[in-house]
Image 1 (cartoon, rainbow, N blue to C red):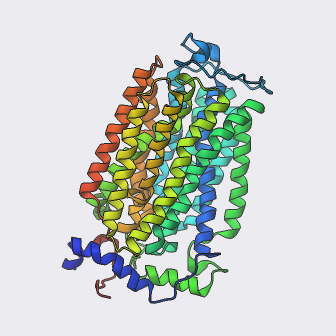
Image 2: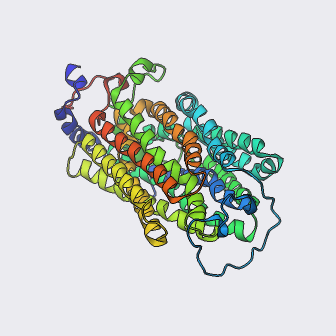
Image 3: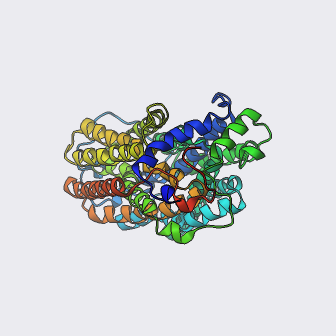
Length: 493
């Protein structure tokens, strides 16, 4: 065990070769029409729903506010001169508007995360004990149902809206831990980057589609339909998920025997033989896990700041209309989605074909995916009213952030696949804090809506990102940790 516990550079370099030998014991199952890639696509649709339900309020909020209540006296409440292109009148102006000040807006936008943080660790635990399929399914279903109630809650008052958003967060909080638990049973080690980036690209695509589409729905139908339509999409997903998804390859009635053997044999030396024992002390004192916690927290500070406040920045500073706002706010996340998928392909190629150690790949992709966004985020604050340059820099910033999808973001499965759901719950608990306090702090710092105030917001996010990248580079690891496995085996097997 001493050789295994050392986690030396030699171990890291031998790990990819071990996977190749291990996977070659059975014939590799084709990816086309496979159950594992079918799961990746349907889970991607699920995360599309999850993020569309999360971000639609950010755009709808612009239309829910009484514009006459804005503190700025210039046209449209924006610092920069609005676009001169004529905008046709709205087809629907019957929806209610509210006199919420900037502090109330910050609490409403951040309230989702107060519920989201509560179910992260319980979600990882319950997924392992009760099954990930139904936990994921009912989590999204609950969020969709509360989304349908959002217009009613807004009419009743800000406190009711905050309560509904908290409950939405409770439902969504179990989704990522549940899916990580499922991937621990479904993703062959050398296909993890590919499968997980396909799965989680749905989160980016949900943002890409929801932001512009929410703007169009607000413009032509009224903001309440944003919640009605996206809530209905969530209900459709639940029906598909219930009938087509299974917790493991062994419980799937339609999987080919070749694929079932390929998956189970490739994972047999990584999964714990005791699902009842959870080494909590070893987990909470693990430095490789702490490295992921810090990186996840840092990355999410920038991600959630932009996710919740980019539409507000587009409106208050750059002066874009509700329609333009949605389309331009979506561009950064389109770039992020594309880079996430590309990075997944490159990461697995480097590990499998070029035999790069997993730890080197994870750290390299994390550095690019965190320091790159920090640089361009700060640069965006100095573009002034140059709309094109501002949107370009924000897009590059988020696009580079997509590279981290193959870095620290899936490192849980490298260091402890048996407890990946619990580990994700722990890291996502800390990573949810930026979503809770980030919008509140950002709105408190931008009460006058000046470019200088927004520069401060960008500087804070960038500094946190750089710190997280450096911390992960020092303490991150790429091999299964001793406490995460109970089966003794040799690297020479």
